[in-house]
Length: 317
Image (cartoon, rainbow, N blue to C red; front, side):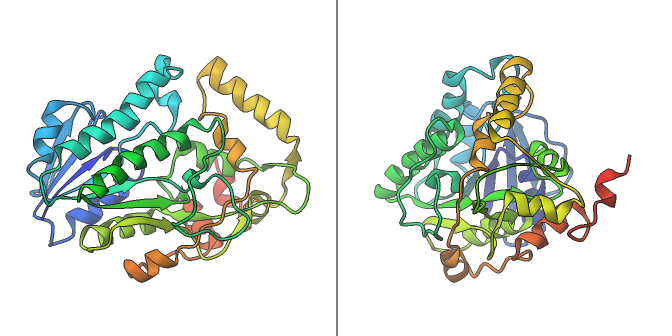
């Protein structure tokens, strides 16, 4: 099988690419990103450029399957263009449409979507739930629009899987997520604290690999079996934690982003204040997905290379 990955230089790509190169069922792996990708493997071919480039479309036409992960996750990555919604949406939506349009008949698409498309939920929700991203959460809104592009193609016969992972953690996770968890602070919210889930990067990569070789189609949730509040996560990682006013935290996030171009869209941190629980039963049934890190505590420990409650590795210079 010849497989192409968009957004391959990203955090998850660093986990997925070696995994797929080690799979004997894959005869050629084409990796694409606007950033340079360094690698030396007989099965590996690298492409660099914009997601909308005709050169990428030509490469897609000669592959059996595409793993589409290219997306503006943190708009500060756009540098001076971080406030350019036209550019971000062109990459996220038009880029997805370009990938879908370039697929050869019979080719398979694995799209990396997000749990954020659901917005919020107190109870575990399945893939049949409506898509209601938090208002103003532009990342989640674009994920919904990108899924709609794929759903329309599915109605025309495209074989596609739309993976919806919860917050992805691990040693290669988004730096801002690891930084947030390294700081012993949490938004002080009225009880009960809203529950959240996470999922380890290796388990997401494993689900992508399984989806490549499975006939299953449609949306699939990916998350840990249990959940914890953000406060509880912080208490499991630090001996001492401090609750801060959520309004103050939001104001600081907005100032850091808009004035200094630091960190993600402030709506990212707003999402930590809302409950969101997924039912991942379909992944376990349809993909035979068995997470190596099934609990939140397992994911946190693996992310920071330490048992929960041990902060020594996080405080070394």
